[in-house]
Image 1 (tube, chains in turn blue, orange):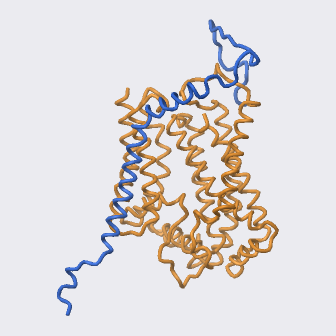
Image 2: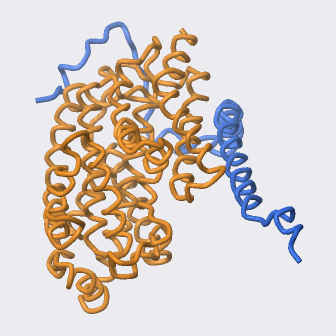
Image 3: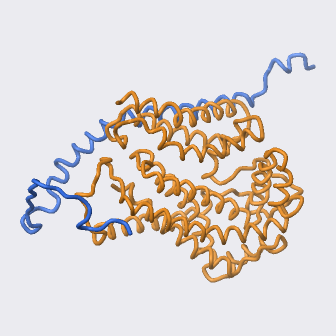
Amino acid sequence: MGRHFGDLAKIRHVITYSISPFEQRAFPNYFSKGIPNVWRRFKSSVFKVAPPMILMYLTYTWGNHVHEQGKRKNPADYEKDQ
Amino acid sequence: SGVWNFGSLLGLCLITQILTGVFLGMDYTSDISTGFSSVTHIWRDVNYGWLIRNLHGNGASFFFICIYMDIGRGLYYGSYLYKETWNIGVVLLLLVMMTAFVGYVVPWGQMSFWGGTVITNLLSGVPYMGDTLVQWIWGGFSVDNGTLTRFFGFHFLLAFVIGGGTVVHLLFLHETGSNNPGGVNSDGDKISFHPYFSYKDLLGFVIMLLGLTSLGVFSPNLVGDPENFTPGNPLVTPPHIQPEWYFLFGYGILRSIPNKLGGVLGLLFSILVLMVVAILHTSKQRGLTFRPVTQFLFWTLVGDMIILTWIGGMPVEHPYIIIGQIGSVLYFGLFLVLVPLGGWMEN
């Protein structure tokens, strides 16, 4: 049931190279390249994520504001009171 | 990536809920005269009963967090193209929703009773046999003892039905193997489950359990309703009847349609629409990684669901009514029109 190693895909003419974990740094350039990369990933997605979230927030605040306004008494209703 | 952890997390959630639920069931009594007080007894007298009940109640919230994230991952990366796995997943979502609904009635608080009354009454919208159907479900002429005893039974049973559905879900998934963020065939790039995914899943388990226990011990009532601290009373209606947070988006859609049957169908189709997503897939690419227009629409859907969740918890007054109606139209419009259009444009 399901698929097994050895029966997944046949790939030809691909050469892979690897280096021992003891011959390399575990987290190379973690901050020096990592932080600029986070900024790059943020820039590439912010204009797709932020506008709907901003619109959502504005709808929330506007809706609550209008609802609060609607609960206030209208002075015109009490003009003829003695 | 990390969003592939939610499948195994859902398995952990199910095991947690079943374990805590079995222990709760040892001291709970499903009769209206003793139900609420048996929960109080568990909380106060049973050794660590308060913790077991905490974990079970908040565990349900984490179950829904994980299931919504799993569905979101599926929508974003086009995993729904594994149609059998996806459709069984939709069935699992419906089963989990049913289990959570009947489970919420079990403690027999005010919101248990009245939430149960509101939602079971929706079945009366079914033409011709609606009223008979509702009374059949109730086991009487209102939500009463007959309802509670069978709902406890359903809650216990459905948990194991979900377990069986999970096995079938995984059966189909293992025919194809998982999707990936690139949306490409990964048959030539497979690595062993152990140690890579065993440790990755274990990390996910630790993070989720940390979240669950933090919520349970620091802020156990954050997402609960204070009305449920009052025993259920058919003579006193709470001013604001609302379900738990994970149902509020559907509740918002239900109340946006000013017709009982229409609202019920809106609620039902808000879940069933997931089953047509694969049929409406128009793009030549599987996922949204390289599709900016549809990515924007995806985040619009996320924002819309948050808005509908907010609206579902608000009273039915201006301007919440019109916001809910626009939100509902946008929800269905995104799935049925805008996302297919986006995919076609991007081609």
